[in-house]
Amino acid sequence: MYEIAVIGAGPAGASAALFAAKAGKKTLLIDNDQGMTRRGWYENYYGIAEIGGPELVETGHKQAMKFGAELVAEQAVNLVPSGASFMIESESGITYEAKHVILATGVLTDLAAKAGVETKDGSEPRIKTVVAVNTEGKTNVPGIWAAGTVAGVSVHAIITAGDGAKVAINVISELNGARYVDHDVLKS
Ligand SMILES: Cc1cc2nc3c(=O)[nH]c(=O)nc-3n(C[C@H](O)[C@H](O)[C@H](O)COP(=O)(O)OP(=O)(O)OC[C@H]3O[C@@H](n4cnc5c(N)ncnc54)[C@H](O)[C@@H]3O)c2cc1C
Image 1: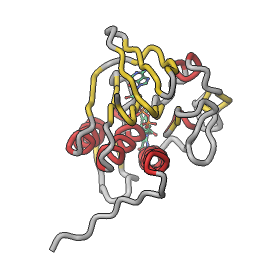
Image 2: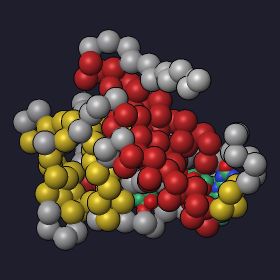
Image 3: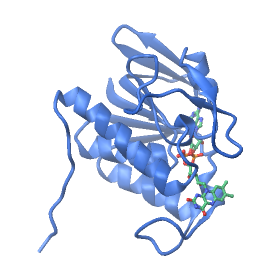
């Protein structure tokens, strides 16, 4: 069983998976490569002068996998509670089990709605519906969290990536029973 499964590997989901895996959590990252990030050209991502969407996405995936996140090219079609965990059913028929699930599905809320997760009208341009979350990223279903565009944050790559990191830190902290920080010191 995975401790954390992230559905969607755009900036929000891959950033969440990177933090989760780097914290030593058994992490699954499921993505069907239909996101918006690949289509952009980025000159407002702090620390990176300019980068194309495909490179931003692929670098993010590599960073998450470097720390052990398992990336699978799959469409999640159902998310079903099963005792204290969740079963994630994929289009190919494989089922994945996870204790916590972070939805990072971009503009799509269909999976969330099927799982009984509360949605609401979006406030950002062209974002019709989002998942209702509290400040930590928790939805109304305990164990299901949401981050990035699907959670209603401003539709900018650095903000969705930061939101994914924030939510992952909250999940990690809950699993650890103490606030978690991930600080590396400059190598000499
Ligand atoms: C043309 C364009 C230009 C842009 N330019 C800029 C810019 O210059 N600067 C800027 O800051 N932002 C820009 N943006 C916005 C930026 O790309 C987004 O804010 C941000 O990248 C969204 O990240 P996300 O992770 O929330 O969503 P996404 O990147 O959309 O990721 C969601 C992921 O979830 C996956 N997914 C969804 N449902 C499922 C499912 N059921 N099973 C498996 N996988 C699933 C999708 O395939 C996708 O990979 C631009 C967007 C577009 C479209």
